[in-house]
Length: 616
Ligand code: ADP
Ligand code: MG
Image (tube, rainbow, N blue to C red):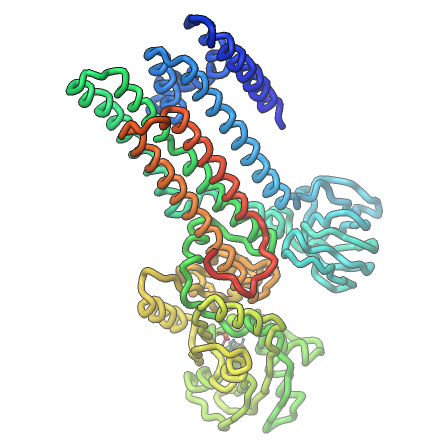
């Protein structure tokens, strides 16, 4: 408990004790206003003060205003105990909620506890401890066991295992050795690591994650905005109704105090605080739970859209497959090694997984080509050597051999003459099967889009059981295809696109919800997407959808609960049912708020079993 909370608690106890004492005392004697006024002010002075100062700031009709008017009204009617009780319950409920909200914020903050505090950099042979922001690219840092890696880089000495759970949600430590990439925010567990820094602190994974999470709060869900607007309209309406309720029946019946009393009760119940607090808290909790699992959601608006997902569209290379190709066949009219050399040289500057794989297989030193032109989704042409798929060859008007293979065929031609081809094959990710099955369990239709040929596409989709496949697409036709699917699905449901950001950043950006792989690499993907899967695990898509559905259903439960309970109390109170007075009203208000907050806190919990999730 904070000091402020303790202070409120002591006021509550003091007031509760005096309340009981006064009631006992009052049983045998007349009491006067003053005896009630002292505990009333002890418990309620800040509420009254805030209500007045809010009015001066132009905020009418907030909950403090409602409570003040209701209790002052009760005092005016001579209902002293009731006024005191309402204030007492209200403060107790507020305290309770404050504690609950603080607790959930803290547990989410602790998720984000990935700030490296310092870096140990080696400068002219000496170790120097400094701020991570002061280390430049190319410098060497030393990370000892138990320390957090401060900057992204590559291991240049030592072996160790690192805990990446803060970034990816993956609890099994990853072994690293010389040459491996490591990321800021992970914790070095066993050996001493020497790391060559590859990105400045501001561009490191840690900074990007924190930026994402911090800006997430600004992109509010429709449900959240609805609640804010609702509260703004709803409270004045209730206040107006209360005035009418106090005036009209009284004028007719002449029973002024009875009807004013009912109207005051109206004011107490009308407090929208259960919704105003619990709905954003649900979304906050949902985003927090997801980030604990390495799923970064850039705003609650995406969480809300995700919950309505009907179709998930996957990219193939790098998303469902590792994007790390092995050369399985070389067929050539010239020397095979020479063909490989031509291809590797042509691919010198390309970032495409196919290009990287060919360079990896060739191994030998390469000379950079002078003229390079890359055709996304097709291949490259450099210094007269064309290297790419059938569509590139067609574009150049080069006749090639008909090749039937389950792999990706890379044709090589020089100066318009076909020289041969290299067949490369990718491996399906270990979790892709689980990804597709998980989505099917959630009742979601799966589609795969790829720039690769149909045979290579089929080889993947048949293994995984994907419902629909489209092959031979270019980046722009991928966008068109996705829009076609969105059209078919309609505006009520969401189509998610999951890609790795290579050749599909435009698709990620246009998709209703773009989910990117390559949280560990491609900047373009992180920028263009709405959700980032930190560990490139496609199975996290189903998990994210499950979490979003749970969050939405909890938020809806709270809205329903609050409206139904308040509606009932309002109705009973307005009808003058005996026993339903201001006490019941404040119970309804505070009780519902507390229940709603407790319910919202469930959003933060991680589900144990994801295999049978639907609506809660
Ligand atoms: P996917 O949609 O499966 O992720 P891409 O759109 O990235 O695939 O690429 C589609 C196809 O274009 C690849 O399968 C490959 O045949 C060809 N391609 C793209 N870039 C290159 C390149 N640099 N070298 C050779 N082939 C390429
Ligand atoms: Mg791709």
